[in-house]
Length: 291
Image (tube, rainbow, N blue to C red; front, side, top):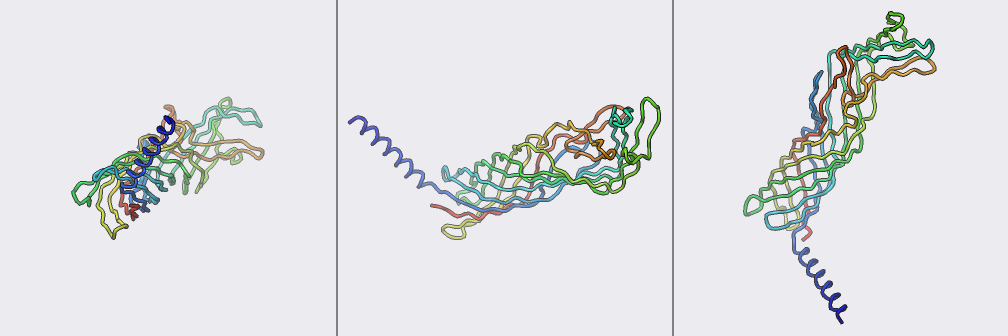
């Protein structure tokens, strides 16, 4: 008898909770957003330029009270930025020629360098919405977004690399041996992937809503997201210039300035500081009220 009583209490509690949840307003929405959508970082050498992008996805809103609601969902966001520098240098010390076993330092001078960075994230928001007026027409939202990297890449175009090698034991410079990567190389193009971390972003939004009918609601507002952690893996631990020997000689390329450092006579220096996603723009949402 006591077991039946407990089961009855559990069932009654479950039904009560279900009935309470059913009374709360819930919304399912689709949204699109656009504006400034860039990678924000301090360019310690050269110049950074912001890029434009967008964000689209689906959302779910659950009303806690008449004034407060929780909002979550999933969306895909695109971020773009550009780095440029008129002049840069990098030195790789202590390389060895596999054919002669001679040790040399690889010096590279770069002019007209431009690098475009493109990043795509799957963002999951957790926001609290508050309605400012009695009619619930104006709202503000705040919370966090967790971004899962989907893709990231960098592309360099138009740069001129002037490379030469200093052979330590011979105390002599090599300047024209292209099979060693020495000489002048124009319009160097590199298109490679970026290795990215999960992103954590603070997010705020403010706007207004219109009831289109008993079930459809239109939201329009401004939103601002700012990253809290460095999204590029490695803490700039890679050398900017990549120089490798192969069967036919040597080849060179370069890493992204976001993930690398350069070496000069005074030591190593980073091209950039912490890299974070940053967005500011207009967001439109069409919501369907479940109850």
